[in-house]
Length: 117
Length: 158
Image (cartoon, rainbow over all chains, first blue to last red):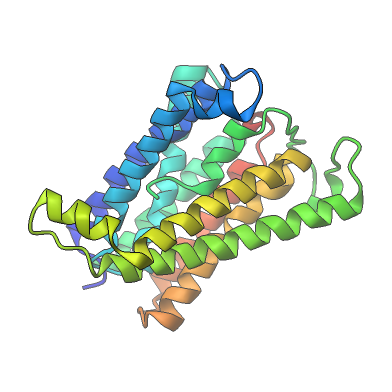
């Protein structure tokens, strides 16, 4: 079996959680005035790092079984979530390039799953 | 990494200005940046992609030693797993280097390069982990690489 359905689901969970890491880092970075100390002690940035660790936890569980060459590229789905949060939380506009990028990533992930079945 | 190194790009580089509709990489020019500095940044990002792929290989190797008997055993077997910890450290290092490279160069130039990681991971998986090669797999990765590169060319990404 190339990659089990549970592995794919775990990657989806990992990418979903991981996308909030970027949101938290962004929210934190907007409050950092200057200096490394300011950054390291920022609760949002800290929480963002914890989010990445949690996301890694699920990703490692995901790649236990199944092919890395199928599961790793699916991590790109985190870009899709991130674009959504960027729109919702930071009011960043959807543009033609973003739309095309998301469409291509979704198509690529679909192709990988066609090959899996 | 349930997320990707590149997703940090737009977050960490408020000073990076992208020129979205530039016809090619050569057409993008950093504000006051020289060719040498740009070359250094490109080499640094290429290094990031190699380190990122190495990290994935270590994570895959380490993941085989995870004990899933209980939540505690999962956490413990992960925290005491040398390849896993090394893989996470390598991943962290590649992220720091990427953010560092972004300080000196335009996002639109460096960001598409990050998608090379997908190509390295695919090659490493097939050559070193003996994973299968199929049309769908190669096509899927190629389309994803194009998609990630496309996002990086976005003028509003910075």
